[in-house]
Length: 208
Image 1 (cartoon, one colour):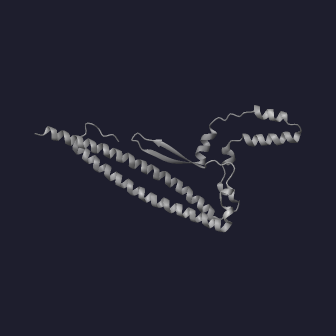
Image 2: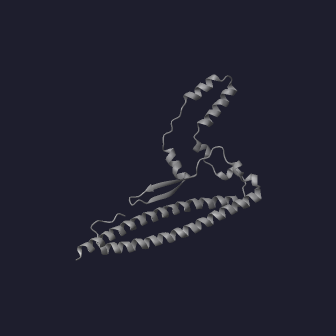
Image 3: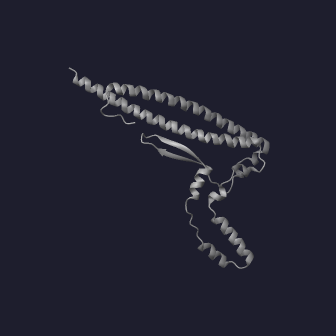
């Protein structure tokens, strides 16, 4: 959104009007998204409160978190030519396919040395099993539904809380993209306004 140097004053005024209307639309959309986001956060915490009431405070807390955790959702950022940064939510299936396409290098030497030091078939099998578990990447061990941390038969309120917070993450990415768009639009508007001021000053100097 860089204004051209040879653009006239009339064209700049029209562009300023178009940009300011676009800015107002973006601000209105941002306000709507923020209200929806606040509603999702309130609903999510209310569902968590219902789950703790049904299962107990200690049954729904950080004590049930898994030992190895990996994110099920990631945020991808990309910057456009106009300076706007876009935020995109990538789910587990998308980046899991990407990870599978990457070659994984396995180290066999250290595990073989540990097996040779152990005596007895039982100990060797235990060591081999532990080494296989340790050699597995964190993504394989941690990619599971977090609801399983709190039990197999969890209440519906806890599932609703998870769904609500997931929707909130997608909405938060949209809000961040809109905020970046607003900042880029404001910078473009200021550059157009400065160009218009220069043209007006030049006309005043040229006029008798």
